[in-house]
Each structure stands twice: as structure tokens, then as C-alpha cells.
Image (tube, rainbow, N blue to C red):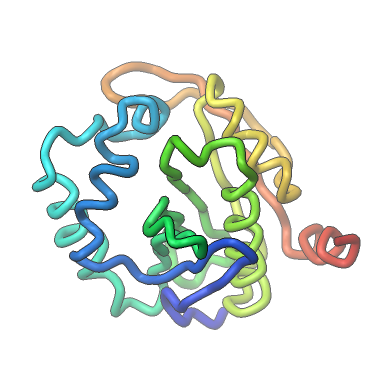
Length: 188
């Protein structure tokens, strides 16, 4: 595999880039403080800007120098600023399987942005990094996230239970293999 870290990516409507400490306010106001966005996430809604700052300074920014760390801030090209984030989680740098997760400000849900962004990240992971399989999961009740995964060709392969915020929650697991992604891209 050819791990190269978080590099800038672009779609028709968005730019993907490393997040910075200056993004804390946009992250807080855009999605981490929104109970509807946090509803299906592993974290509780942030109550203070300091929580977004801590997220950046403890979990995101220190990891950018790692060649196998991939987290992008999603910036709208129409001047809307930072609108979300997407990450590819590498559990073992030698393992050709990675896991993706994403967040988008609620005002832009249902506009096709996340499938567009996820598609660009899949292109990068398969073509540049050389992963074999990309997986994602969603809480079973979060059907909209499942639609995002299906729109980029991910296939539902299993169900399970996970503990989230102190309770057992049903999950659906999805994946797409490199060869299936190539076939889909040829059909675009």
C-alpha cells in the first residue's frame, strides 16, 4: 500500500482539505453541536466551542503527520465554508481494509454532497493508496446514511449490535471492493 496521508481532493462542488484549529467554530456550529447530527454518532452533541477545539487538538491535528491518517474537512466551493468532515480509518497500516465515516451539516442533507465526496475519497483510497476494501457502518435507523453508501456502490454485508452511548444499538455494515469500484467507475 502507498500511504500518503491526508492530501487535498476535489469534487465538482467541494474541496477536501486538512482541518485546522481555525475550523473549530465552523465545526462546532455546523455539526458537532447539532443534536440531529449527533443522533446517530458515537459522540454526544458538543455544548461548548472548547469541545470542538479539544477534538481538533487531541484527535485530529496531531495525527496529520502520520502517512496512514486520513481526515478531511469538506469545504463548499460556493463560498459556504466548512460543511462537514470525512475520514478513512486505518486500523493496521499493513491491512488493505479501511473504514470510512462522515458528517455533514444538517442544512445540506439530501443534496447529494456526501455521495459526491465519498466517491472522491473512494477513488483516492483505491487508486492512490491501493486499499482492497473500504467498509462503513451505520446505525440501522440511519437509513439516509445507508443511501449514501449504496449510491457509491457499497453493499450491505452484515448486521450486528454495538454499544453506543451506553446502550445496545443495531448496526448495518457495508463494503465495496476495489474491483467493484472500478467497474462502477467505468459505468459513470
